[in-house]
Amino acid sequence: MKQDHFGRRRSAWSLLGLLLVCALGSASGACQLELSQRDKAGSGGDDSPSDTKAGGGDATTASSGAPTANGGAPSTARGGSANGGARAGSANAGAGQPGGARSSVFHEEDCENSDPIPNDSKEHAVDFGAGATLCLITDSDSDWFYVDTPSDGRAHVFEFDITETDDNLINIEVTAEKDGSNLGRISPSQRGLKLSAFLTVGPGTRTFFQVWGNASNSGTSTIKVSETAEADDHEPNNDRASATPIQPATEVSAQLILPYVSATDQEMQDWYKTELTAGKHTFQMMAVPSDLYPKIDVSDSANANLSNNNYGPNRGATFSFEFRVDEPGVYYFRVDSSSSKDVLYSGVKADSYTQPYKFRID
Image 1 (cartoon, one colour):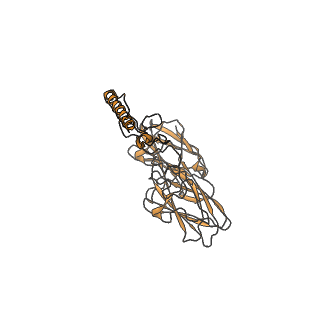
Image 2 (cartoon, rainbow, N blue to C red):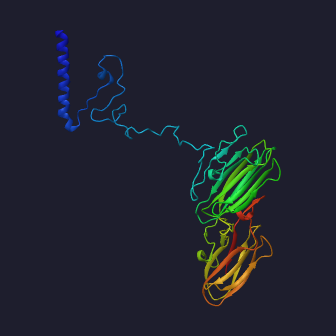
Image 3 (cartoon, rainbow, N blue to C red):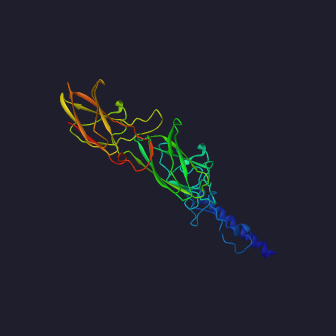
């Protein structure tokens, strides 16, 4: 009994001494009292000190005794985080407003799980992204998608490459978000057909696509979506107020693509202005894409017409014309299309989507 009593007294004095030393050193931060699970339990067992804590605070320490950098917040460096990767079928896969980057998601359906994407209404439309493989059994079964364009002042060309299995046939209705106007329908003429369709829309806009199946479908349709911005450094110059300054005797290269935003917002004209000396000048249209039929109007700084409706003999033709100005000053040139352009069509890609027109003024 005496031995046990003195043993406890020695332990108490040892602990008191340790505390006193720690108290004297605390001002300089030199003392750190650590208690392991074994010390707390007092059982003398073999438990490892895995729950070590600093005596001066509650921050959990790493094996070296230093606090974790994020103060104990869960780490997201490891795979498997909630936002680790976009998966097809997500309700908001790539969702965003016009002006943001487009999604690269490719949506996947099959006929055993034909509705993994909750987008059966316009209100639940998802970003078309890189496209989709869809199983749409009837005309009452539809999926809704959208595409956005950045607010970059340029027209954008969307290409839809459609491949259907032999037993499948779909339709795609296209509408503008801004006014709900209908841009047309992409509709393969028969089952199992491969088809390319093209859509041209303006900057900073959203366009909706309702995809639905024909009656008695039993296969899938794959729609691959790609997009190209108008390769024209002079944009935006679709009205007189935004005319691009150019230099005479200098070749100008540009594109003329219909930038559909709404039924009342689809101006495809290109405007330019330059300073000319008094006298005779020549406008030379040096290159024209095979599907383009451009016409040129010339006006002065007071908006008086000097030379109108100048165009070539047919689509794709180069041409030139002369005009005279009575006094030096700034003059305006409008490049427009003599014929209407389709905002949506199927077939072969138009040359004007990849090839520029070129001109110079001498």
